[in-house]
Length: 193
Image 1: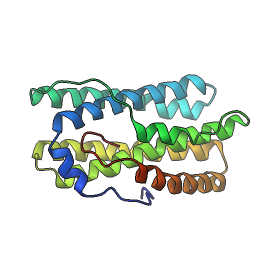
Image 2: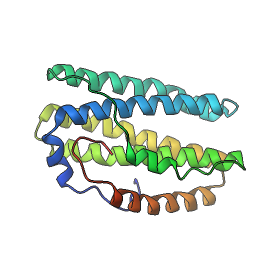
Image 3: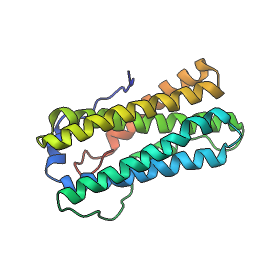
Image 4: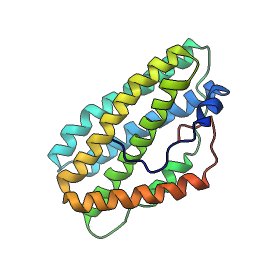
């Protein structure tokens, strides 16, 4: 369903289990960024009725995820650490074409966000199946389902505002580039991406 061309190395879950506080902290900040990204899209493309309609509830949902991650930290007597650079997302956003056609820029932003959601979904699925902490298994199963919905929303919005064939071609291009991005980034258990 997600179309990812490179699965996450299954050893990632083992790395995560060694640093639960770190992964939950990183996850919390990922949810903050997802919230602010959806808000930014609404602000910058407020004339796109369907986009506003679809992303407005996503803002609340993403912020709700942030709150849930904070609860998981507190439940374990862990603390929210400092935010850290998300090399994966930063590299993906370098793919956004600047200037020129606003429709192309919007499509790129939507597709990059779709990929971030798809990768999160894929990794949350791994956690929901493999992590030893049964509470976190359930937690990540629920979030996996939500991330899949966000992925579909972003792809759907891209196709709402751009020809589906153009969207599909650009999606495949971004997926192929993601392989190189992932190859450059060290597999770490303290990062969602």
